[in-house]
Structure formats: structure tokens, C-alpha cells
Image (cartoon, rainbow, N blue to C red; front, side):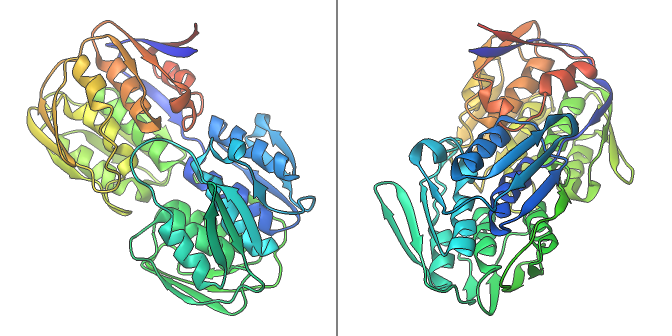
Length: 419
């Protein structure tokens, strides 16, 4: 079992490069299934979720070469004959459900076990099913397996009852090879939805409107391989922004798209942190005597749910009372107990966390309950007095490439230890 040992109190300074977007690559890799050809994907984050998905693609029959030296993947999906993903494959990764949409698009059928992933609350797939059925597929969930079959996919108008990134992408994957025109209304607008659409278009699809709440897709008969570079990870960037502010550091965060971070940087400025934006980088200069603020997570372009946990650590340093409201996932406050063990004054009331600061944190042994909770634990360790031990860091490594190396490069005292 691996853990991080973090000696707190070091101010982060220097430069850090942001990796490719986890949430985009986990949709783009399954999307290569549609091409029946060779694709090269660049700016790939070397995280455990990617390694898991690469293994899944190999088990399906793809020829995959992970070029770690260049953060790239070469995938040939022409050797895949069907889309059947067992429970042992799918349970390790939430994004395995994208194989359903891609399998439907290429083979007109898919059999994928119900996906796994972080336990952060209910994440139903009813909107995915609604979209597949609207395209003409039958959908049956039997013995934990999602079974979809159709003779011919036909484009249709689909209204999402709730904004769902997963459903928007999954329906998009199936619809690009449906006959006729598909319109997805109330679509998710997140950057990785746009990136997936751009990748599909690079393979020859006709997807328009990604990034707005109406996506229009004209089906094509076949797709081809391509070379594509994944966008930078806005959540990784946001995590380092928060870490820099929490340690009252001075960090230049490079290889980013500042527009994707506007909801985050706006809140940091409101707190009293100095933010200097450039074309593809942001400089964060942390300040003492932060002001309390209120935050509510919302679909993009609102404040991202994936940064709710990290910024809550920062709010323990703000004078007064801050309120963080989680509107996306109801199970995303499990990390609060870990912070309370470090001395944080936080009370959870339904979907809101009431944080009273400024409260110094003290070191202890804490556990990462999920991916972003793990990031919060690491930031807490950076500002706590003494040595903090963070356990279950496999969660952290699902979404952050070499986080201990990047933090050490900024002056943090952190090491990974195998027990």
C-alpha cells in the first residue's frame, strides 16, 4: 500500500506544466473504436485511469502502444470484432460506459458491465439510456450488464432532462454514425464535451454546436483515423491554483486554457488571491488574511464540482464563515471528516458545508476517500503543521500525473512511501 508523507509549511514557488485532460482522454480513447483505423492521441496524461482504459481496449482486441516518453497513445481498433466488456473490466472505471455509445455506433450493439468509479453519490445512466433508445436501440440491463442492440441507428431529437456530461458524450458517440440528423438539447457544455466533439470531427464526423446547449450531429457512414492532441486539464490546473494560494506561494501554471478556469480564478480573486492571466498560463500569488466567500457547484461554466473539495481546504484559512453548496453529487462531503481530524471547523448541513476560519490545520493520518478528496488531503498536508500521512493515494493517482514530483518541483516536502 502506498501513501504520501507531507511535511507542511513550505511555500510553493516556481512553474508547473499541466497535463492533458483526464475527463477528455477517458472519452476519446473509447471513441477511437468508431474509426476502425489507427489513431494517435497526444498530450495524454499518464494516470492510472488511462492505464486501466488502455488495458480494456487491449482486452477488446485493439492494438495499443503507449508512448510514455512522448505522452502519446497509438491505437488501432481495426482488430476489434465486437464490444463486450466484462464486469472485471468495467468495474474499475466509470468511463467504461463510453464503450456503449462507441460500440453502438460501430457494431450496432454493445454489452458492457455497469461501470465503477469513485463513490461520490448517485450517478444514474437513465439519460444515456433515453438517448440510445431515441436513436432506435433496445436497452436492457440484465445481471449488471448494459445490453444495447439495434438494426439501424436513426437520428432523432433528444432533450436531456438534466445536464449530464456522460450522457451528452455517450449519445454523441452513438449518433455520429446514425442515419440522418440528431439534435441533443440541454446538452452539457464542459470543455471535455467540446474536445470529444473535436476529436470525432477530426475522424470525419459532422458535429456542430459542442460547447452550447444544442449539439447538432449529421450521421456519416464511416470514420477514419487521425492524430489529435488532448486539451489541458482544467481540474489539475485548478488544483495547483488552489495549492499555490493555500501555501501563500507564487506559482506560474503553464499549458492551460485560462477561459476554462474563469469560474475558479474569479473565486480566488474574491478571496483576495492575486491572479495574473497570460495567453496560456496563470500566475497565482497567494496572500494572507483571506476573505470568506460562498461557492455553489454548477455545470460548466459554473464552479466545477471536481474542485469543491480542494477549495474547501483553502477556505479553512479564510476569516469568517464560508458556505460551500454541492449541487451535482450528494456524496461529495466524505472528506470533511478527514479535515475535521486535522482541526478544521466544518459542519455539513445537507448539501452545504459551513466552514469557519481561519483555523490552522495540524498533521495526522488521513485517508483519500475518492480522487478529488485525495487532492484536498494533499493540499491540507501542505499547509498543516508537522508530518501528514495520506493513505489510499491510488485515488489521487487516478487523475493526477506525477503529483508528488510536480509538487516537489515547486518546493513541497512530499514523498511517496510503499508500506
